[in-house]
Image 1 (cartoon, one colour):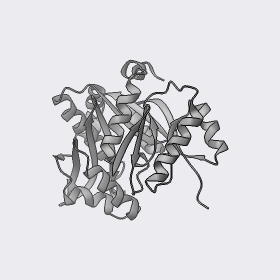
Image 2 (tube, rainbow, N blue to C red):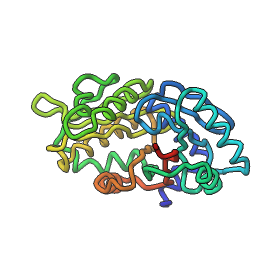
Image 3 (cartoon, rainbow, N blue to C red):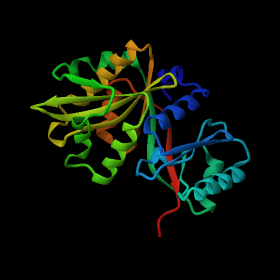
Length: 260
């Protein structure tokens, strides 16, 4: 963990990030039990249908917790999925014994809003970003355009669109949206979600322009810190986020029983 990340996120802030994460993807329902959030959703967005602990200080009652959470999901007709940090070793062992396997290694990263605003300035100067309180057709069209999985894209539009405290940003060019993002405002954090750029417009600073405008909006609202989640294999995104001030605070994976 970097010095900046340590300053921005203490152990008590795991909860605020996880609550903000689930709020941003607006699942069909979200239960809470004994230090866990239990979001449930019919779509493809992993964060909207995976049980997540609100603290990384794990106690010894792992078998009981796993059994209870599995039952809760099964009672609602959903396959149980756990979103767990790499440090949850006791839970990993219990889940391994139950046939669960880890998938989709992901970094949680944080940054200073001021750093994002400053470091994005040069890259973003060529593009104008539009900000809306509701996702319009142009914003949605970036997700639903060529190059993205149509089923997953539709699910992400659905979940991100239902969030109660989000802004929807897009870059327009020649009458069409060519890049977009969703900025959630929740539990004291700016959350960066839904970053998408049309294939023919990548590596031209559009994502930086959106991040800069997110930071600008956050500063107006008095927010000082931002977080995002990014696949550990997404090298281009990781390079961008590092360049604009983000640093890793923990890594997680989705634990689920393989199909078949």
